[in-house]
Length: 160
Image (cartoon, rainbow, N blue to C red; front, side, top):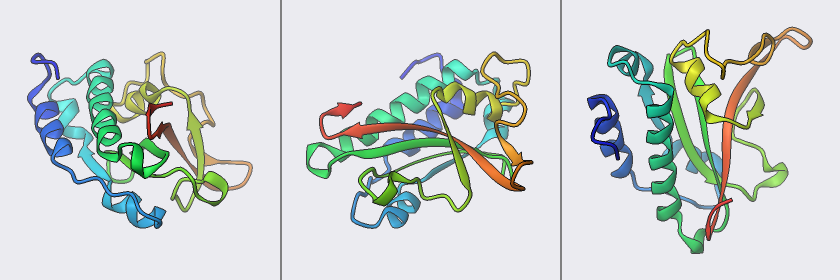
């Protein structure tokens, strides 16, 4: 952890590292039990940058990876911005499920950089990480909401 982090990230990190991580045969139950939720307004109020938020989430991911260990098998660590509640969220669930799907009721667009989710959460419309029009939100072709999610697979031996 960086000593120069804003106080809000230090508090969020303490809460995240005290979380008991659960991995069982129920993906949905685990996803709900492992979910962490942070109000974005707190981060914006303290001027948290995308880089600081990314470092914070890597710490959370590493905590989950250590907690899971080799005995639990591969899992998915994922991060998304919930615009309706203005919260940044992350969770963890088993990766070996039918279809390898994340436990969302809507369509999901998996993206390769967590910074894209963070820039959206922090309202950085001019950021190099922001999605192009049509990449998140309402999909006009089908009238369905599309949730943008960053996903990392964590195996029993570390982050893939």
